[in-house]
Amino acid sequence: MIDLRSAIGKMDRRVTVKQRAASGTAVADSFGKPLKTYTDLFTCWAAREATSGSANTEQTTENRIIYPGSYIYYLHYQSTVTQDMRVEDDNIDFDIVAVEPVDGKKFLALTVQKVIE
Image 1 (cartoon, rainbow, N blue to C red):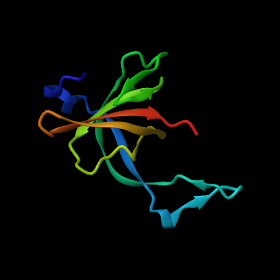
Image 2 (image 1 turned 180 degrees about the vertical axis):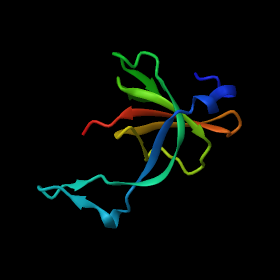
Image 3 (image 1 turned 90 degrees about the vertical axis):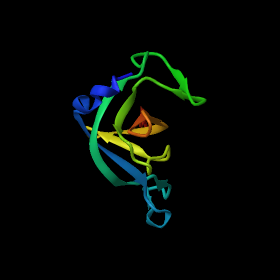
């Protein structure tokens, strides 16, 4: 875990948190299947750390299996972030699989997994 006393100095990644688009704005693919679409909620600075074993093993968090390509992002606390959202970092989307307030709600720890679609 990142030392939160110096976390602000380690927030060197510009990320965008995205929420699912309203159901009335769903887009379909060429076969008529609805696509999951997301809209930008906010952009902020964050620190990223690889989860232990993320190079080649799976692990569990909150009863969910996390596969390789998972990270923990630390950002300033935002009460609106939920597990139904995504994080975009360097044009790569990650599903949020766990949201944990840290240090008295000063920060959020977002456990994410790379989107594979």
